[in-house]
Amino acid sequence: MNGYLLKFLDNYLGRFVSVMFRPQSSHLIIEPAFILIIRPGGIGDAVLLLPMLQQLSTIYPDAKIEVLAERRNAEVFSWSPVVSKIWQYDNPLSFLKLFQQRYDLIIDTEQWYRLSAVVGRMLRPSRMIGFATNERSRLLTNPCQYNQDEYEASMFIKLLTTLKDDKNDFKNVTFSLPTLNQSIFSTENPYIIIAPGGSVHGKQWPADRFSKVARLLERIGFETVILGGKGESITGELISFSSCKCHNLVAKTSLTETSAVISKSNMMISGDSGLLHIAQLFGIPTVGLFGPTNHKKWNRNSKNQVVVSTDCNCAPCAKYGIIPKCHKGFKCMMDISVDLVVEAAIQLLRQNKAITTSISDPDISSIKIEPSDSGFIGRSRP
Image 1 (cartoon, rainbow, N blue to C red):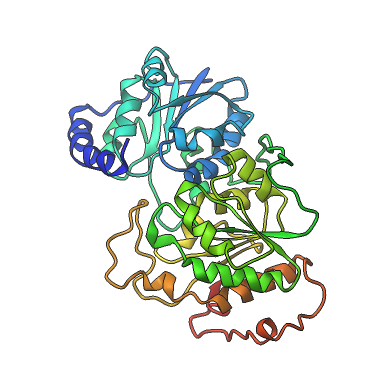
Image 2 (tube, helix red, strand yellow; image 1 turned 90 degrees about the horizontal axis):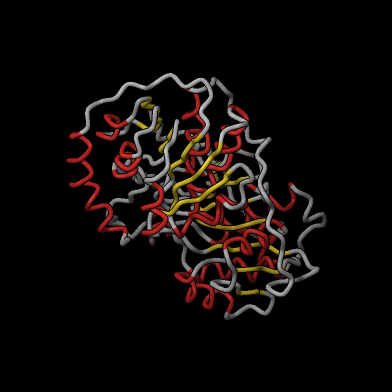
């Protein structure tokens, strides 16, 4: 369904329907046998949900865990060994068959929109957990508070606190690691991923700057691989046009193949995107370019995940995935320079011993970023 139409329907129809339901008390469930996780939206949220699914399976090891997703993010859940069935909102036959099922527990992981909670309530579970961010709280038996400044994977795990008081634990996440299809991409040389995409224009950095970063990194011995979906096809061509060691795989790989290529890379450079979250889940070092979105919420806090951002007093401005209209031409992203990104990348490569010698290239060795008064290191937030 068109995203704008869905938002319109949710704002009016979803709000109206939500207040029509009476608040419901939860029924005591000692050990739920059938659990449904609701996760509409894009790839990024789905990836960040994988740790919670793993944690849930340790709380209820004998339960059957199913997921209601969309076509665009359903493939992510096929990587999780704890998911037994994937239903789809935008597959009419799958969606209708869902209503023949009965669940003891439903966890609605949507942060703001109401229609997912309406669907969950219509399935009549004994217990339904979700975020209490608006009228949707009326539909939940166990509403949870939502924090705009907390890492989203942690927020998903906090939905489980009404079941069991567990600490956030990302070390025990397991899933089926995709196998690299050698016919898609193969190289014996070290390579860095460039992921220029983003769900909205405001999160995207200019293609010509990504191209300059790729050329500079190639001069110190790294090939670059560009990854993305159909929406980044032109961007991928622009980045790879002037580079002989740049492999353009945009729109040429499935999501599973894309993740396999990411898993063997030395590093990823990306804006706030689903592919950035995949890299971080695999433990790949990342340089994340953040403008309108909050790095505290969408970037994993680790020494291998560096955030590059500039001092823009109106950023971050996004809330619940919605970026308001910008009257400054997304200055927060446009002010991120090539030097900032290259400096962050080289520091991260050195930290992980991917670079062990000094750099003699004058265009790179001359890059010097001074610490700013705001506490950023080179205006890149650790």
